[in-house]
Length: 186
Image (tube, one colour):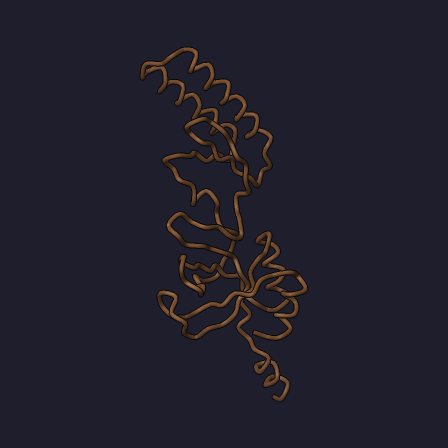
């Protein structure tokens, strides 16, 4: 990695991580990557400035080094890391409306308490308002036990999966200062 790239990373307040080409986190063919971007677009801008590549890195818990999973063309899709047994993910209020109708129908067919159903519908209405007011680049994650809702970005630059793996968007500059010097001599 070029010194200029490292200097620019420090200016931007980014992190430098070590990447291995070895299997299972084994330290082989080590190189550095720049991480810590708030948005995927920031990573693209940085990569363009340093003539680098935006990649997806992963690291298992307990490993010190990241592995390069290849070129990244967009951020990490948050919805793919949601526990589907506990949560539902919505990116439109229409999807949520349809799901609520199915939930109410299911409650009514399974023997229900009218007051409990009213409370659930009230909570669903509050959640519906949260979903309706979210931004277009956000998703709503609804806890199916109490219909509470959290809105978050559809795409993120770092996420920790429950299967003990951390994924992150990073920039790799494969050139070195020596490569630059050799080009000038030619």
